[in-house]
Length: 151
Image (cartoon, rainbow, N blue to C red; front, side, top):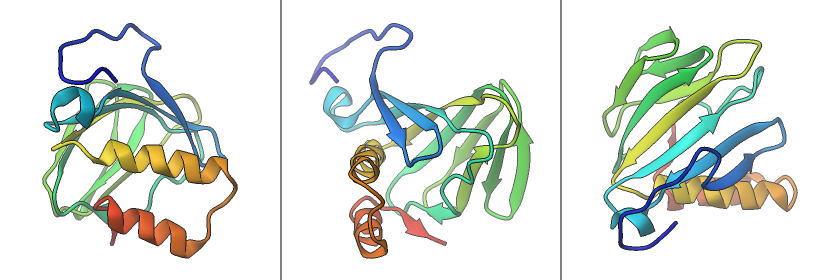
């Protein structure tokens, strides 16, 4: 991402990450380097049948989801909903949450983090899985380093 100034990304542009080995893809549209640390924005395309990240929380960041395409199962606190296009979900820091593709076809959503930083977790996760399935201790250390606390 460009550092310290305004920029425009066209469709399909951004840092594309393959997440795990099941077809989930994330494209970084904004990271802390380009936003002065204020927020990160990721276009997420969870694969059908992919369980997604288990319920977790972030102690130091708020998160928001905006569904663009498909159906997304979103757990926020004690509530679970099937969210379609146009659905907005705000997740206050400290709230247990999870999301996954709830359909048998493509899904796409925007995921915003404020302040920035959680997009770095996605980058490191993609690198770790590209090198082979990381061991549980390495995954736990990665989560601790990036404010991802499993519920």
